[in-house]
Length: 455
Ligand SMILES: [Zn+2]
Image (cartoon, rainbow, N blue to C red; front, side, top):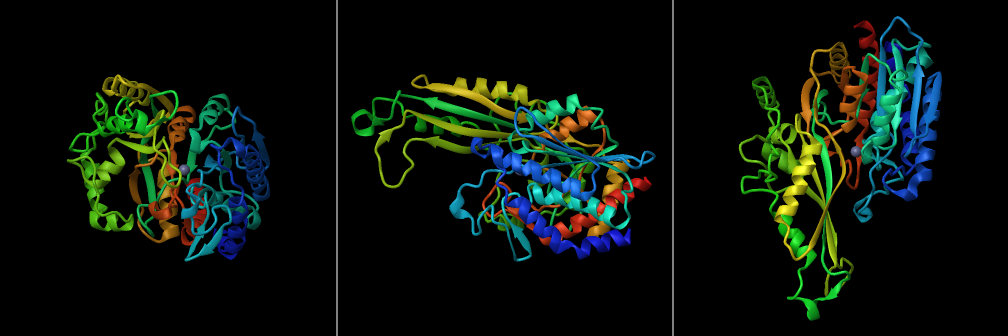
């Protein structure tokens, strides 16, 4: 084991150079113009799995972006771990807010900066390299390992879900390991056992069939942007509660243990507000910040499109306006039902003067993973060894819809070994990943494979 760890330590700089190569590929899954980059990125990941020592590596085409698979099954008497990651990344705009270029990774201030540095290339790359270190030093792995790297996590993983259903035998495993979450705080080894779900919708308000002169027509016709703003303003009441009917109906209540556990994490609202650079925190009344972030559902407007947004002035009444709306959902809310309720609600508050269209873009369920499985225990030991501290068990506000499908389809305990920090700017300009977390992530991965083989 020590020889694996020192190999990882000695090769840290090489791994970072390889990661940079990975990060240079602009694998933005949502952009149709980037299809070739996605194929290139899948090829790169597959090659890394081969180089790491996986004996069977395949790129499976899908109706969307390809899925990369790799396996080494040289230990028939030992358990099998399926390691999941995603090679696709979020778009990079607004580009002018990036200090360094998003696809020209650089290292400074103890961090590697690039789109995907944390989410998720940096995080899953540690597992590829820990596996490689085992082969380079001991010639084998302590357990069987399968990798599955998808290219559609940021757009809903729809083709992976079909793949999981279809390839149950290929993906059979005793545990699923995912590094795509955050640590509770810098230096605090964390295993996450709960994630929120997501429902993403679009509301379009349509007025005149073309933009109109606001002097000639202003006062006579409804302005879709004004009307959209009025609709959005009705989504919350004065206590920060979402007003969509039946929204909270099936929300899983916090247990007493959880409530106390969260208290022990001692989150300071003031400090937290400072960290994310806001004047103060806000949200649903009656809950602490951690409870709101991890166990309560939310509704947010993510973007508004409409009218004239260029430089200078243009006096128009826009013909339409669209809002992107996301809801973070929790167990046991059903996104399909919530989508129906939301749609009904929007129609009920929409003015008659405009046409309104509500569309569901994608959704995923929230999940709470039972603690106490061998895999979770092995992971808790592993991160504790790597970071030199006691492991914290947390829930998280983000969503990895695919976790629910993994649990449902493969029926194996899922370990969320997050190595990122909430301050890493994932999905934002200046995304980065702490070199220290990358390094300790390498050790965590290696320790996990070792601990899991002993369990
Ligand atoms: Zn992401």
